[in-house]
Amino acid sequence: MSLHPRVPGEVPAQTEQIARQAFPKGCLCMRLRDVLGPLFADQDFLDLFPRRGRPAWPPHQLAIVSVLQFLENLSDRQAAAAVRARIDWKYLLGLELTDPGFDHSVLSEFRDRQLTGANLEHLLDVMLDRMREQGLLKRPGRQRTDSTHVLAAIRRLNRLENVAEHLRAALNAIATIEPHWLAAWVPSTWFDRYARRIEDFRLPQDKVDRIAYAEQTGHDGRTLLQALYHADTPRKLRDLPAVQALRITWIHQFVTDDDRMHLRDAKDLPPSRQRNASPYDDQARHSLKRSIGWTGYKAHYSETCDADAPHLITHVATTDATVTDVEMTATIQSALAQADLAPREHLVDTGYINAQLLTADAGATELIGPIRPDVSWQAKAGQGFSLDDFTIDWDAQHATCPQDHRSIRWKPHRGRAGHPAIHIDFDQRHCTPCPVRAQCTRSATSARALTLSTREEHETIRRARQAQTTAAWQQRYQQRAGVEAVLSQALRRCGLRRSRYIGQDKTHLQHVLTAAAINLIRIDAWLAGVPLAKTRVSAFGRLRPR
Image 1 (cartoon, rainbow, N blue to C red):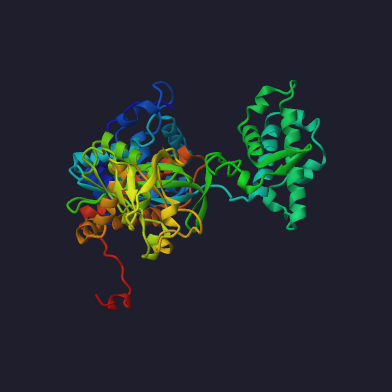
Image 2: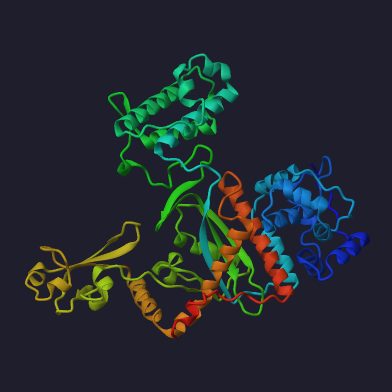
């Protein structure tokens, strides 16, 4: 396929006439075409197509169809059928009523071309540029960010299923490339164990039987790997992704003892961020956040929230499920700054904020969000002596307890995450006979000890916690709650909760197209004068005394 750029033309007269008759009050596609014109141009996608070959379907129209597809949560076949049959779609695309459209496989090919590009967010960036030209996107004064979990397009597996399915996937991959090599030596019993999907078997329930099943699977996998790494085995087999996934999984999950393969204890497993959760998506990871456990990814959406403009999504990030929100804050702010969309106020929840970010120089952007509370038992109980009850003399490098006793040790060190910290010890001679010892420590023998951040971070945390209690701060922070509507809209209308595709890049492209679709919905609502919905309160809830 090659690209011969065409300038988007006007809406054909017959298409416009029939559309006006069918939608006398207008509709989303018609309003968008009338106000924004063609959303994209072929010139926006020059780097995705070669110069020679059969002419491709105009990419500016494929981009519009891709966005409309997610706007209505359609499959490729349904979207291609809508291009042939829908008058409103033809109006937005500028097609004749008799245009036959294209085969549904063209949409998949267009997504593949976008994946080969340098910037997966290119389509959203182009749309934002068009909206900026029309005055619908201004330099944001305020933005807000939140994330939600996304289920990978795979079945969730337990440990036994996971290791056995990795072995089955490797056998299938090898049988596709070199069936004769595999058939020449594979034991006949393996066909009974791995010819069908592991979930189709009834796995043993008894603990002893499960251990035996795991050892047998581990032994079979080791046998296959030894055969693959034999000098006479074609190298292309060991380079197969499924074989490499098998090798890594066996390292993570098994340990050899007296020539027997044993599953590792849970405490000996590597972090979830390193372990394959499935042989069919080596980028999906399992994670647990509070009471929610899932295998897949996380989607981070940032949107403008100024009152005098439509609320538009300006940035999308996709990570594996184990990446915490706070790891993405600086990345999101940097991306917004590069796109000249850095806000004056960036509203986030507790997961996106810590002392390091509050003390870091974020340019003209002020990070607003609740800092994590003091988690010591004294602070939780509301009684006893918490860290705030101690006087810290940073210059003299000592702390003074509420009973006016000074610390005896001030030791800078690196915390668990490698971040600078300070450990402070008090004298046991003072702590043991102290009359208020029960309010200070629960240890029966040890003296009180404190762990501080650096001076700048410690003072920043104290100021932030004090500010959070004021009515002025809480009123500013109320604006963040609206970001929940973005996630709800993406989940309910665009099917964000489950990935359609395998792999993080394809999942990210889905999230970008979802963001573009939501922007169209919101631009249309702004043009039609639809007010923002109010927070729903039940009839009984409205009776609550103020």
